[in-house]
Image (cartoon, rainbow, N blue to C red; front, side, top):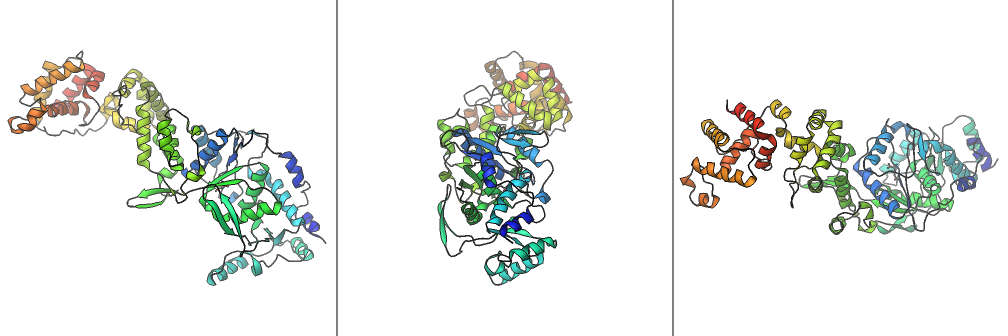
Length: 553
Ligand code: GLU
């Protein structure tokens, strides 16, 4: 009995060879130095920022080099799979225009690219071909350790402070006679297939990671499982080897947590004589929590989920920009010099990534976003808010749809000027900050009138009636309007000249801002709003009068 007999017993239906697959997946015909990158999430839940950051890098690397960015669904762990996860991931990529060049979507049966299937569970035969090859060469073996045996090995290793894993004397089945292995399999014993590691833990090798530079690791000597017994599917490590080799990936962008697996990957690629791709191990994403800085949590921090940004209506530009600033610290300086360039033109450098962690700051996102929205045209804001609200706030959607002219006018307040007003960080803010301009909302909400210095109802009534009966004219220009306000201020015993007021505050009932505040609050209920003249202009006489009347009586 030979290794070949054992391999045939385990994989009777595998008849192809590695060489067959190498022909099927030839070197890609791409320009020199073109990069082939992949985004390869496991469909185990929602898409989070720890996925988004590598996906952005993958996308940039491929676009800049006229390479290929493909999506691979790493669904080898069927027990952890979440329904719809892939659809969601695709939607996020779509939303941010990070569309992969090659992909496969089961729900729509869409597929593109010659290096598929792009779904790992559909590649079983390919992995098994590679595993069969190792079995024939005596570089892998079936291992019959039971779960209980492995648990007890682990426990004793932990107790004796030894390295955890199946290596050396713990690798009980590594030298089992072929006959015995075959007999056990025929008897129906359960097994996994393990790599027969040839590494020596006391030997070190050098490895170049594009972020961390040259690193040194001890060789792997653990007989890692390469095929799971339950599904016949490979482990992550083995699928990484086979897929990134056959799909001709040049750059693997993945989380820091994989750095510790490099010895395993190094040995796997060496065993087959394949060239390793280049690796960009991205830093952990951190957040400030009070005084502390900690890892962003998928479970507890809503902003870790990409859905957070869509639900709040952050423009995709702002989200991409905010993430780019934590990818490379020189991004902001580059952006200042290239205000209109696409982020894909940024000369990303893995060396400029922080290896200790990337601090993601929501305030920074808000600033980027406010700045961005402030430079949109009123039409762009209107259309963006309409699109967002159609999905997330139907009431506001209906109002905007029916009041387009007014919406445009409202979004234009303090917009077309050198330093536009920056008050919307996301589209959800728009309703929060403009609701009082729409009668449907103004009439509906329970208002808390934020009167400031002047609180006396009679005085407020006097200011309002005098203003509207004697001074208000909807055709006034801004200058005339303000002259009239000053006039009114003085007439009522307040001071229209701030300098004078500051010198002799006791001589007056108050100053001009007290008067404008009363008018502002009576009309909007709020003490802080954009330009009052603009607001009056948009609301117009009838509506203003109605609001005043309602307020006074
Ligand atoms: N499926 C792996 C994960 O989601 C991908 C890691 C990689 O990019 O290789 O963590």
